[in-house]
Image (cartoon, rainbow, N blue to C red; front, side):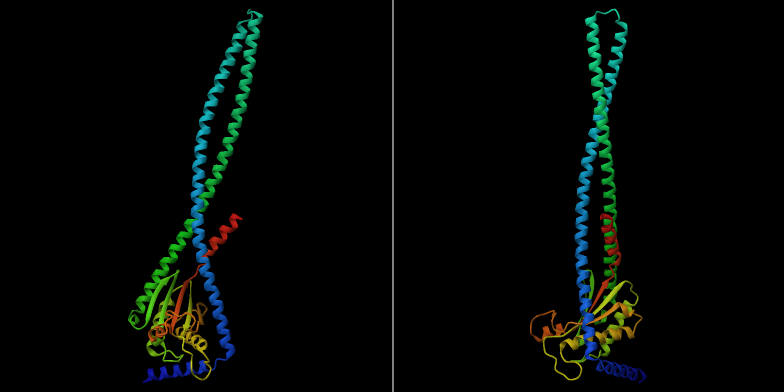
Length: 340
């Protein structure tokens, strides 16, 4: 009897609170929803940008690898040419020594022979100077290519490190999302055939509960069975870190007919999502800053048909769990600052 009395008292309090919400408060809730929708679009855009960045980094790494291979081949060719020039330089030096020795030994040669020897010596010296100049040019060119090769190697290493960091964080995020989906699915297993589904898509987890599981027709008060499902979900989420929870209310296309503060489907969807958020907070240690309540009215149906089955499917609460991507954004911001 005491438990029944407590439940009745809680329901009375919730009904009293929701009946006192002013139109101004409803508008504030709608504004919060619009901000949450912008955040969701922003996160979706950032996810696509991450994937594009990952593809661009992979393409850049492939291009740098090709350049690295070409520079390595050029370096090998220049090394061979350098060794060949050194050998030729040594040969010319040897010839010069021989000519000088021959000149010293031929003091008694004729003047014509002396002029011939002098010409050959001058020619050899000029050739030697030309070879020395060419050798220095080759050395400078080789040093420049080595420097460029070192820079490209460093850039390649940095890009590979950045890509590996991004891939590791994305993999960790996907693993965390998958693990959370399994925990949520297991916690809500008893409600699987009662209008509740758990899906993972776009890096998020979508927990969809048909209205018949949570609310009496036209009501914003969660029924006992719906409360049990929401409390089980809240107990799982209170152990999670770095996630945001968006609670969206949805209605069918039938116009709301009633009196009081609920004027239309917008009001009904917003107040139902607010009731869900309050119930989850009251029965768990969830951080209120993690949760956002929003209403979408009848404007995002799962099934556009006008049948009773489609309408029942469209009357729902969707709880969207999104991982925190701050770590990914920090890496991307750091990478952008480095490239600038």
